[in-house]
Length: 522
Length: 99
Image (cartoon, rainbow over all chains, first blue to last red; front, side, top):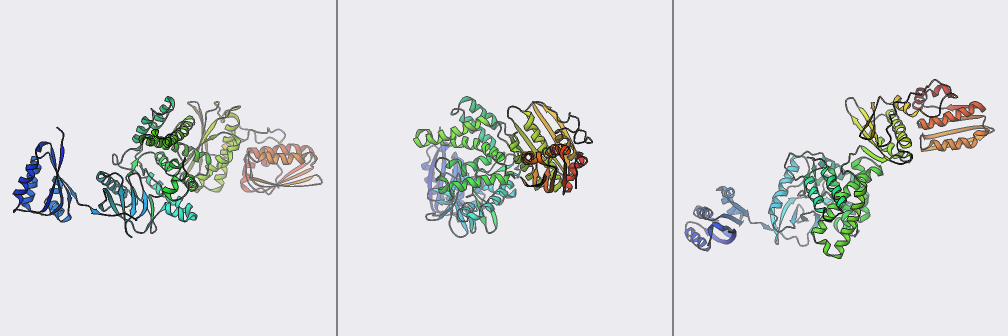
C-alpha cells in the first residue's frame, strides 16, 4: 500500500476543554491510519496545552507518521520546550517577504539573491520544495566559515510567494560584477582579489565526506556523453576525467563575479550551495562557462547575467588565468583554458540535452557548436590536470623567450638573487636550444620545463623533458678551455657553461623520455 | 632584445651592445659584423650595457676574433662582472683582448 498525506488544519486553542473533541474529530477523518502521514497545518493554531500535546502524541502513535507545519513562533516555543521538535517533524511558519521591485544582486545555480533592505538580502530558491536545499546550503556555508572562507550564513527562512528563501545580513555590499561594469579602471584590482580568494578556496583542505566530490559528478557527465559523441572521443573523455586524481581541497563550483561581494573593505563569498571538493580544473571549467561558454554563440547573454559585455568577460577570464598561474606565457594559459573548456563543454552539452535542447532549432545549434569545439579539443589534449610550475611547449628556437620568461616569473616570486637568475636563464637557454636543435630534427616535437623552488636550503630545480631521440648531453667531453682562438671549435660550449653555473645535473632516459634535471643552490 | 649601435671609420669599427646576446639575437649581431668585416683593421665591442651572454653570443665573438687575428685587432671593452665570470669559466678571458 502507498502512503498518503492527510492534511488537517488546527484552529484556535487546543486545551483540556476541547482536546478530546479534536482528537475524535481527527481520528474520524483517518480511514487507513497505517498508511497515513498526518500533516497538521498549524497556521491558525494559537495555543496548545499539555492536554493538546497528548492528543498529538496519541495521533503520532496510531498513524504511520506525523508532521506539524506552519507553526507560529509562540506555539513553536511550546513544542520546542517540551521536546516535541525532536520527536517529530515540526516546521515553523515562515515570514512572508515580497521581492517585487527589489534589486537583484546575485544569481546562482539554485536561486536568485535580492536586497530587501539596507542590511539584508534574501536568496530565493528556484526549486519550490527547497527546504532541503536551504538546510544544505546553511551547513556548507557554516563548514566553509569554520575552515576560514569568509561567507555569509543565513539566519532566517522566509516564504516568497510559492518559493522559499533564506535571509542573510549583507550590509552595503557590492558584487564584483557591478564594480567591473561601473568602474572598469578597477578591473585589475578585481582580478587580483578574485584570484586571491580563489587560491584560498583551493588551498582549503576539507575533512572527508563533508562535501560532494566533483570528480564523481564530472565522471557521470562524461558517461552521459558516451551516447552523444563518436565512440573514440567519448572513451577518451571518460578516461581523461577518470585520470584526474581525487582531491580533498575545496572548490566553489559557481565562482563568478556575482558571487563575490565587497562589503566595506572585506571580500565575501556568497552562494555556497555548489561547494564541493576536487581538482581546480573543475573550478576553471565552471568559470569558463560563466564568462565565455554560455555566451559563445549569443554574446549578449553575459551582459544580461553579469552586467558587463562579452569582451570584458574574455579579458577577465584571461587575466584570472594569468594571475592564478603566475605567468604571462600564452602557451601555459591556453593549456589550462583548453583543459577547462573540455569539462565546460561537457557540462553545457549535457545540460542542454537534458533540457530538451535537441528538440529545438536553437538548442541543436548550441549543442552542435559546443560538440564541435569539444571534439577539436579532445583531438589534441591528453590530460586534464595542470601544474602552475610546468610549461609544455613546441621545442623551437622562436619559443626560447617564452620559456625563459616563464622560468623567470617563477624565480622572481621567490626572491631569487639577480646573478643566480641570470645563471639559471643561461642554463634554460642552453638546454632548451639543445632540444630544439637536435631532439626531433627534422621533425618538430614538444618539450616541457618544470621549475621547482624548495626551502632549506633554497634550491631551484629545473627539469626538462622531451620525447626525442635518446641523448645524454653529459656524455660529451668538456671542451679544452685553455686552447687558443685558432685551435678552438665554434660550438660545444653550451653544456659546459651550464655545468659551470649549476650545482648538479643528472640525465635519465625513461619510458621514451629524455629527462634532464638541473639544480642550483641559492 | 639586443640594441646594436655601430660606427665605422677608416677601417675601425665600434659596436656598442645593449641588452641580451643570446640564441635569438646573436644572428643579428653576426649579420651586422659580417657586413663590415672584410675591410676592418680594428674592431671594438663595448659590452657596458650587455646584461646577458650565452654560448650563441660567445660563438659570434670567437668567430669574429678568428677573422681579426688574421687581419687586425679586436678589443672587448667595459665588461661587467657577470659577463666577465662567463668569459673566465669558458677560457674566453685568455682568448679575447679585454680592456
